[in-house]
Structures are given as C-alpha cells and as structure tokens.
Amino acid sequence: MPNINELLEGHVTLEVECIDRLYLNGHLPSLATGGGLIRFLTEHLGKPIPSPALLGPITPSWVERVKRWASEEGIALIRFQHGERKDEVAQRRRPQRGVRDQVVFIGIAQEKAQTFSGRKEGSTFRYHRDKTVSVHHHYFYLDDEDFGPIFLKVCSYAPWSLKLCLNGHEWAQRPMEKQGVAFETLDKGFRSCAAPQKLQQTGERLGPEDSERLLRTWLERLPLPLSAKDREGGYDWQLSIGQMEVSLTQIFDRPQRGREFFEEVMRDNLDRGRPDRLPLIFDRRVTKATPGPFRTRVMQHGVHPSLHIQYKNFDLKPYFKEGRGRVPRAPSAIPRISK
Image 1 (spheres, helix red, strand yellow):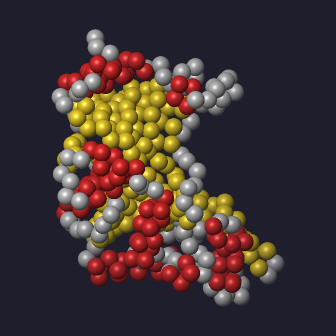
Image 2: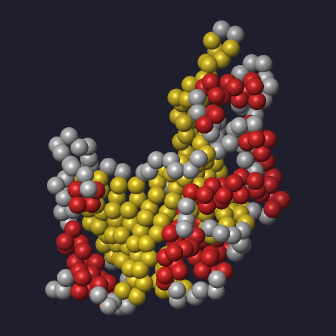
C-alpha cells in the first residue's frame, strides 16, 4: 500500500484552509444579572416599581411586530416541527425565494432558555437568572450581500439572547464572484477555483470586525425586542464565540485516489483519541487527572465513513466529502474575541 504522502503527491488539485462554521452568541452585559434587569425597568423604562408584570407585554408585542413586518415584506413564517432538522428546511426554502441581501424566511421553534425569576421582597422585587423555560425562538434566515446564507436566532424572553451563524467558505465565495474569479462549489465549500492563492488569502481575512459589522447591519434592519433607542441607552448585544470550526479541504483529481487516502488516514489514526496519543494533537501533557472524554469513533454516513477524535469539547472530524474532497474539520468552544 502507498503511504499518505505518496497518495497526496500530484493528486491534490485544490487545497483551502479557513474557518468553516462559526456560531456567535449575542448577549446583553447590562442584563446579565437581576440588578441589571431592575435598572432596565426603573432607570431605562422609567417605571417606579420593577414588577415582573412589566416584562409580560414585551414578548407578545415583539411577536406581533414580527408577524406584521413579515406580512408587509412578503416573508414566510414557518413553525418548525419537533425533531425537524432546521438546516434541511432552510436548504429547501432558500432556492424557492432566490433573494440577495434580504430575509429568506423566518422560522419559529420552541426551545429552552435561561431567564429571570422574580420574587417580591417587601415593597420591591428581586430577580435571579435561575429559571429555565421553554419559549419561542425566532430564526431569521438571511442572505447577506457579503456573507451569503446566514441565520440570526433571537429568544423572545428576557434577557433576549441571540445567536449568529455563518460559514467562512460561503463568505469567501462572494468576493470571488465580485472579482470574476471562476470556481465550483462542493456543498458549502470549494471543489475548484481558477485562483487558489487568492481564494486562500480571502479565507484568511475573515476576522471579528467582519462579524461585528454583519451583526450591526442586521440589527438595524430586523424587528427586534430591543429598539435602536434601547441600544443607544446601553442595552446592546455583544458577540462571543460559541463554537468555531476550522477545516482543511483537499480536492483529489480522482475519487479513487481520495478514497484510498482517506482509508489510509483512518487506519493510521484509529488510536489517536487515546490519552497517550492526544499530546500529538494538543501539545499538552495528559495525566490521570486530566478530564476526558477521550475516544475515537468511526461513523458511517451512507457509504462514506468519518473518523471522530474527541477530547472535551473538541471534535476532530476527517471525512470524505461527496467522493472528491477530504475535509478534516475541528470544532471547539473558544472564549470571546469580539468586544
């Protein structure tokens, strides 16, 4: 059997390394605590008593504004069914409404969220963010001029957290289109590109200032629980990274060569998830006290297997994509990088 280097040499037609999926959490620091909520109700809204009754009208009022706005703009409101894969719904609906730089549709899902519980103490109220409830979340599926397909998820209950999801490969496609560079797609990534070096340089440019600008653009355009006036008053969302996936895509000239390479990689790395082997990936000492889990799994998707090397929140996942591309993808939870 040829070794891995021999399988790669002269048979890779395109190699691209960049951010793949990026999940950004939007939180309101001014509403992170019960005291912050009290200041919001009294100082910002001007109410003498911070009663929980003041929060009651905010959610239905916002939900009604979203319905009215969607009707005026001709945007479909879709209620996700329990267990339904939202990505699959979005893939079906995006081609039906082929828009650029607009809202494609709005999805509604019942999901758990952490919110405040209020208790009366004497003549006032105290709040603790210790309550888990099942509430509506609105998914705004968008086509952004610069980022392509993205979605923004907004919780309908205080403190109105949000999540922004984007894809670095799709972000890189828009500059290629504008510059007239020919390319073929492979799922959300690339199968070929007339200017590989320019593509790699484009992928490397994606940074926190781009995601911050993306959020600000859509905060101004979408109906949200907090208005522009609220944001100016200090109740504004800040971004942190919930999960970032980085991938290295290698496209082979022949599917057979790629499959041989992937099978050899799997054979050589079946023990990579063991504690004594993980330092080769993470460059750290693993002892008996180091928390896990440590494991290697082989999973089958149709006729294509994928190899999962898992350690804590990290999952290194090499797989053979659409019979042409080898993609090692590494998602992990990372601290905040945006302001």
